[in-house]
Amino acid sequence: MTITPLMPVYPRCDVRPVKGEGCHLIGERGERYLDFASGIAVNLLGHNHPHLTKAIQEQAATLMHVSNMYGSPQGEALAQRLVDSTFADTVFFTNSGAEAVECAIKTARAYHQHDNGDAQKRVLITFDYAFHGRTLATISASSQTKMHTGFHPMLDGFRYVNFNDLEAAAAAVGPDTAGFLIEPIQGEGGIRPADKEFLQGLRALCDEKDMMLVFDEVQCGMARTGHLYAYEHYGVTPDIMASAKGLGGGFPVGACLASEKAARGMTFGSHGSTYGGGPLAMAAGEAVLDVVDNPEFLEHVRTMGERLTAAMNQLIPNHGELFDHVRGVGLMLGLKMKVESRPFVAHLRDNHGLLTVAAADNVVRLLPPLIIDQSHIDEFIEKLSAGARSYQPASAS
Image (cartoon, rainbow, N blue to C red):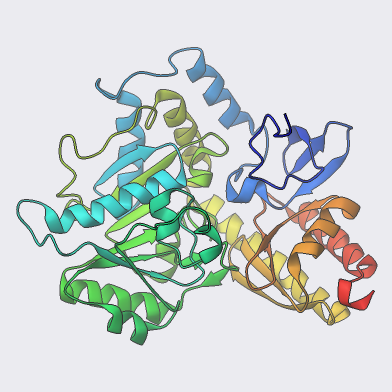
């Protein structure tokens, strides 16, 4: 037998964490890493946050799982908090971001097809470099052909246009269009924030043609931008929104949020989940909101984001052969490089104990825990600077 016990779909690196402490991960040999990846925007409270771990421990000792055939006091409580803090009137809980986006896609289509509505309105317009998940529907929603390889045929019902191109988006609308599905700030796509005017234009098109504006805030949501959700940064309200990653602070939980109007097609039997909204996940979500959903914490995120950006901008001229500029919002930042970013990310990880994430467009993605303070920024800049000094791009060797 040559295949590994873990299906070999990840090119796993040599970092093997066994413990976490705040903003650091510790490997099985005791090596220490500054974690500016946060499980790709998941561990927003860092590792072993006392309030989150206590909530999970207490709930695990009380009740871990019941069927959604029964009432859910825990789910009702977390849903009410999300409704109170967002545009939404109703919430469906899932286990992941991909499932949340799947629910959002179904909700947008069901809106048009409910009660003998317009059944031909089933196409969602999506945008280049988008990442919406790894299920068959969510890879079909992406124009990235590398994710399609080996899984054809793709599901129909998606039309791709250029990101931040309102004219192209408007031209793509037809009688079969159900709405738009978009990340307000693309993560995998290279930390590309949408232009405010672009999102405003999509909102206007949806209002004009009775279409659904669906935001995928799986990565950019949950306080990462210094607002609870990124749509607040733009002042543009969606009809449907997918959330996950930081929502559970490390525990698997996602959510599809919708207005009452948008959810009119999601009736008894239209959707379901065995594990979605379980008591343990709901306890994690409540604990996360306890910490992040207040003005002081959100201001902290914005302040740390400004300091981290300023520190990198100060460093960039010292390594102009490598670094180009910083982009992003809050603590969802990207360092655009003049060379390929993936080998540099590996160099920082393997030689300087700094964990970041590569993204499209030769960007180093920076998604630190939202609890970072000035000492973590100083440590990051020290490691980044050392990594830049010692790096030899392949083209230079």
